[in-house]
Length: 86
Image (cartoon, rainbow, N blue to C red; front, side):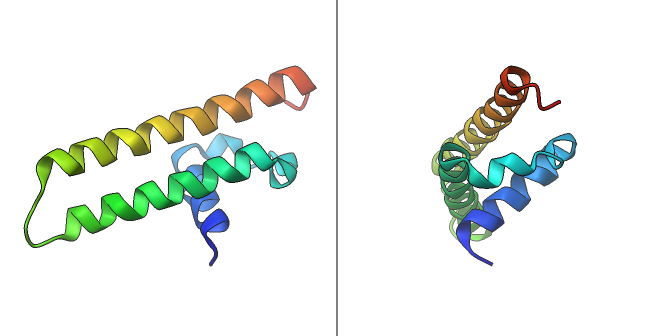
């Protein structure tokens, strides 16, 4: 699975109500958010599984993931609101 699809899958797990928004597949901004989100999630996963824990890095990475997730969800909801795509 490529990075865009993996990021999109993770976002849809976080916000299942947004899955019906097919127009997002053509949105460069949304696809960039998916890539950034997946990369941040992969870094977080590596930090979680590391034998030597770096709690500060993990906390920062988790915050980055939450921020990207919130940005992507807000972007989708805003675009649907203004385009009439409920």
